Image 1 (spheres, rainbow, N blue to C red):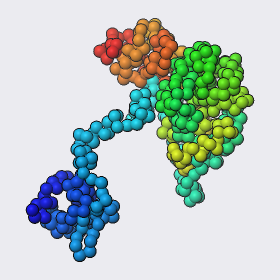
Image 2: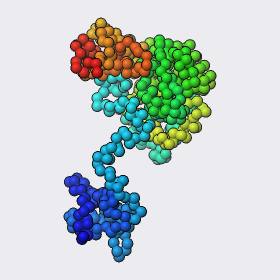
Image 3: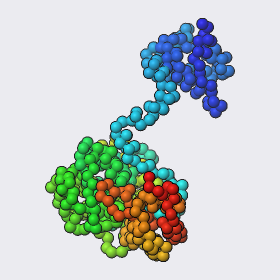
Length: 501
Ligand SMILES: Cc1ncc(COP(=O)(O)O)c(C=O)c1O
């Protein structure tokens, strides 16, 4: 068999028009080595023959050969030629990986148990292609965000940042931002902490992930509010938690029920300022009861304050952390709802004894949060823009809930009883004529609205059917339009996709 025939037997895949020539040749030859078409120790076809056969310049072929040699797939023997390296593991295992098998490897079956648990639970957040659609519930008012001001602060910070900020940052977060956060949570939420207790995270989501990884062992029991924040439940379950659903009433999570169901739970997740999704505030008695139990059971409490800044009437209630004398509360806050989602910055206030350990262990997760983004945020806060923005938003959201309520009274009478939320960025509407909130939500979606059924957040304890309606993200005009469309949707006969599935 001539060398040329040997090479033809390699059946290199044809090059697609856009592919760089030497990269194509390199990839094809590497594939031939890995799947055993070119055996370890075999002589490589000559560069001249390859060039001729595939109409490639000598420079192109040499570049591909050089790359193979640099990566250790081949070796050159002076005066003799180029050979496939003898230590390369080749043959059937790789050869068997035809495209169909590769697809199988990418399928769920090839993933770890942990990833399979992730995939079983997760609801992927779609990327936003629009803003402020009625009744988007997971966004603050992006239409009112002072984009020009943010851009000015960002550009100044980036221009003046010392070169050292382009190197590695502190695992716990950028120190001026930690200081600004400690000052803000102290003055605004009464949280008692030093800057050293702050760990900057990629939003609440990363805080939950780190807490799950670092405080839970497989099978540990975790109390979750029912109904509650499903993403927190999913994240903690993915960390190995056994979830215990604890019902919620008008005073927040029912601590007595939790104590009966799982007296030795390791962790509790709560939203005391504005319970998600029922929007109740945890009473003082419940707070004390929860803290007493956690101290005696040696349990941790996650206090998630994602939208506590937005309170429209009544007095703001101080954070649960302010009452914690045994150091069991981990306070979690986020800038995604106070500024904008894409920022992906949030923080935890940790009891002192956890700080060092969390900061060090976090290194294996993402080293540290992005420094320059933190520097921009730190400046935005210390120059007073953050406080000003929150005050403006509080006023605007109060107007928006008013618009929603007024429009609902006019258009939704008899079909949806919308709660006049006193806090937060979303509210509930109790369905009067639909038995299934999932059907009602599908019907509304069919009419182009973004609504979420309450039952999506229930774990075990049923509630009357209700829809979650976001109001902060939507302009008054969009809220009015949304309400009138919702009225039509809920009064129309069920469409096909509105039928029970
Ligand atoms: C209860 C609750 N906590 C926290 C968040 C914010 O999460 P993140 O900071 O990861 O965006 C949300 C967002 O919708 C939420 O509903």
